[in-house]
Length: 240
Image (tube, rainbow, N blue to C red):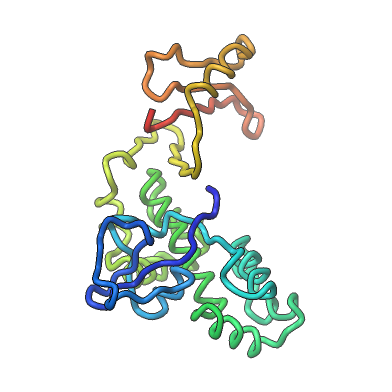
């Protein structure tokens, strides 16, 4: 998914933060703008269930100095999944104390808090878009235990993982049927019908298959090997 978020709007009267384009329209005097969703969460706000701001990635370019942007890119890439703030600070040529101060001054959140927000947002997308068991979601997202994952979900979204999965939207409920189904978001215009036709005229017989246009989503499928075992990958436009 391309990074698109340029800040979030937190509403003091509801304790909720939203995307700027959310259909909810609070009074301007009740709105506080934060550069990152993680900063709004650190201030005690929870993600809006309507616009689901956790589904957008961080747009790094305009959130702070080059040093901070570099640090955010490293955190987004997962550096704090395997290392601590001391390691990150050393990589940037700073002390841990100075790094935390710069983050707090420019972003309103510490590096560790940003990393936790990244993990719980990724986990929420797995809850929404896949049938992966909750325990596996917790560890895939980098949490040390299911209990830690549950606390993070309640803190960020107001409910434990089992409730969040039960609330996911009809369009997100993609049954795995013996495989792993992922719903991938994207930004910008993608003419999937034209793309699938392009694949169709170039399909390799016995390897690739493209829907005939009557099938919903114009699916494209191809065979492949996963650890020397045969598998099939199917791509379709769920809005098509």
